[in-house]
Image 1 (cartoon, rainbow, N blue to C red):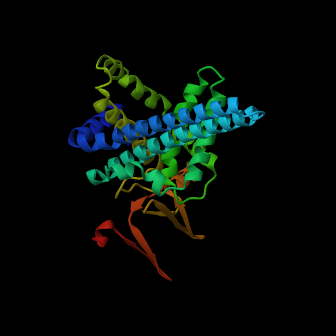
Image 2 (tube, rainbow, N blue to C red):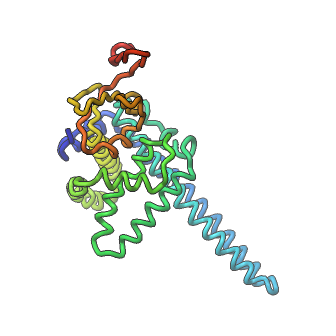
Image 3 (tube, one colour):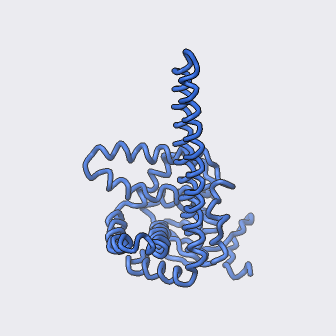
Length: 304
């Protein structure tokens, strides 16, 4: 069942109240380190720019080359800022999602906030980000449509996290986000509306309120994605519903195994959701053992 806005915010506020220190570490310290790093990059850029200007005056016929070098350095500088900011933002979001799902404060570490730099395929993320921003920029030329599309595409990077081992095209995650948000963009917009008063109030506190507000907002929108995905896939941890069409479905480690007369097929939860809109399936959080003449189903308690 999809959680209401009040439930999402109440859960976020409860988690924040119980883990404020660690959430501050995860959400603000990386941003602070990023600002310090960017200041260093700006200083370096300024020094190099001054050096290039000096060389352009002292070198006969070399002003064009130096101008080109200055432009290239500016491009590298801008790309460094964008990529670093993107990776930190995604790393923080992934850490919050892991925390919401596990309810384990141990995942709220500074190292996890920088997880994108350490473990995840960076070129795939960059390609997803490229198409994400390209589509948004193109839609921005149509009045109001750009805003709608920004909500439609918002879950793109979360969906990449939940399908990290799938070799999917970059645009596939954007399409999945659009399908996942179908009928829920207004729900997401109303969440933003409910925070407008808080963000206005933070202006009068010179931004100090953001120390509490940013983790609160981030947890709420992350919880929104997790609740939406659970509702859309019909997947609840250790839960089950009725099924039709003589299918048996078993969910284990975010995989769906479909067993029927044609054999065994395996999908990710999201792939399964996108392929099976017209069915009502049984999803059980457990594992299976397929013998020659039988199928044994093990409940989660059998593993502990």
